[in-house]
Amino acid sequence: MVDFLVLGVAAFGAGLVDAVVGGGGLIQLPTMFTVFPNMAPATLIGTNKLASIFGTSVAAVSYARRVAIAWSVATPAAMAALVFAFLGAYTVTKVSADFMRIVLPLVLLVVAIYTFARKDFGSVHAPIHSGAREQSLALVTGASIGFYDGFFGPGTGSFLVFLFVRIFGFDFLGASAVAKVVNVACNFAALVWFGYSGHLIWQLGLTMAVCQIAGSLIGSRMAMKHGSGFVRKLFLVVVSVLIVKTGYDAWLRW
Image (cartoon, rainbow, N blue to C red):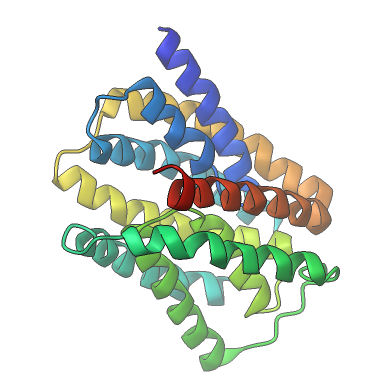
């Protein structure tokens, strides 16, 4: 009972953070590994995805009701992410992802420095592409991050937000809204793989999903109430924590 309570609180926090800027996995997945240290990692990751897809879907719907989502970007990016996240999940069963552990903190550091240095970054929603070029860039972005999510995963939501601001000229709020749609596709692709391979604990995943949904509703409303400035600040906080966590895992833990 205590274990379920701890995981419920973690799922709520993960849903709240994830709904704003991504990075909820920083809270939820480590908690699952702590509570169930002897369970197969694939089963914990699969169960984490089961809970996350509900929270992310609710956040996406909440954004869609109040924010003008750029569907001309979200749709092709999500379709590409769906396919390539599955390919990434398959590839990681054949090729080691250890090199990603070393590179990831450095990439995140560049993202944080760039965002911090440009004070106006993501403050204004001014799309800079349209038509075929916009859709082509969306496909490439969705495919790249989708593959990364399936292959490795940490920071996927934050990378999506950053790229939608940097490449497409969205503000942080608009970028976060589109990121949720793409995240749903990534989570669904991963769920197909983990479900097929039997790495899911349905009762635990669905219980955590309820808490994720509650957190997602509050997080998405906070983001829409306080706007892009709030999302930017939380984005920098989450990326900073990601740098510390992934840097520790890659360079110091062993």
